[in-house]
Amino acid sequence: MGGKFSKALLLGALVGLPSGVAITAMYFWPDANLMEPQGFYFGRDFLNYWTGGRLALFGEVEAAYDVSRYNALLRAWFSPEQSGMAFSYPPHALPLLALFGALPYLAAYVVWCLLGAIGFVGVALGGRPARDEKALLAALLLAPIVWVNVIFGQLGLLLAVLFVGALRVLPSRPVLAGILMGVLTIKPQLGLLLPLVLLLAGAWRAIAAAVATALALIALSLALFGLEPWQLYLSQTMPLQWTFVTHMDGFFTNQMITPYTALWSLGVPVKAALALQAALAAVIAAATFMTLRSPASWPLKSTIVAFGSVLMVPYVLAYDLAIPLAALVWYLRDGRPRPEPISLVIVGALWALPFALTIMLQVNGIPLLPLVLLTGYAWLASEALRRGLPRNAQSALSATRA
Image (cartoon, rainbow, N blue to C red; front, side, top):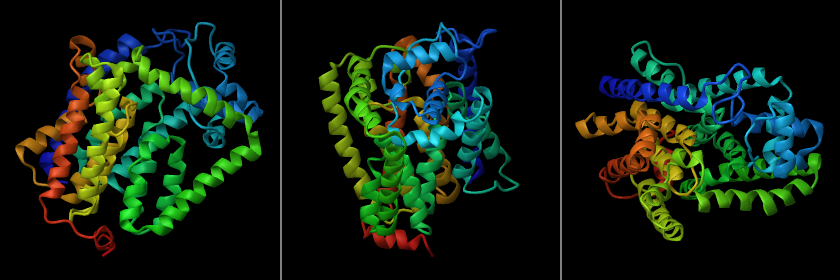
């Protein structure tokens, strides 16, 4: 990666971290009983992953999809003051989470965060950093998106490993890419553009591996837990998740990063905002299709897919930015874009996400975070489309094998 881009990333990290420290002190710093100011136990969302895994080990997964019973368990296991939560992942995620549920809570949280951080750095770099990439390594370790996931105890860093890792290995190891994509179905809304990628590339082995992996995980969940958890997930959990989108009430609204969020924060009615989000998703899908058929480099195409994927659906939160930001480092390092002033500004602003721009929304009601993401997507798409006329995606993918 060019030195200018490394410095832009490092500057973005240094700009974003102070606001992150301030937000952590205000909202997340735990007391002596490990309770955060907003009434959540330390590790916050990791409670869901650990508890889901624990219930899988105990054979009581139905409790994960019964909100009242689930929250009673959280208050019994962690603190009577624990605020309400909901387990939102499909049952085929539970066998994977059981690996963490087998550990004591704090030990599992540390392992979770370490695996996520190491995986994020690894998938962004595609290997070990070069000796002259100290600024880049510092930018990765100090990246606000890493600390957002650590503070929230979230899954975003590991999802980046699955998503970006799959795209990295698709040209050379399509079966492994398909397996990673199959596991990614535990959060399926983030993978809406991946079938387009696979079909245009004619990556039939990857498609077969993805379908087989997803079906194997689903079959395993049915064998272990039966049909009832799936019935509860489809009839109760999914409708509950949709009410979060339509009601937009709570702290989580400040962490949403989609165009729908920007429209809602500006006062656009929910139905109109959802309609505009759907229209924009169609535009993004069409633009992504065009870029995938262009002669642009595979890292650039993959980064466009990563950015488009978090902009396609109305409900995506800040910690999921790990996916496009890991892909961005891949492109800057291997795609060798020109370090023009506008691109340096965009890269620095993206890397400062999400703390600083979240504060702007909280204080001034300005939805800068989705606007910066859209700007980043537009910049990447224009980089791809100005490099020549479209050509067959299979030949473009084949060229990456050379």
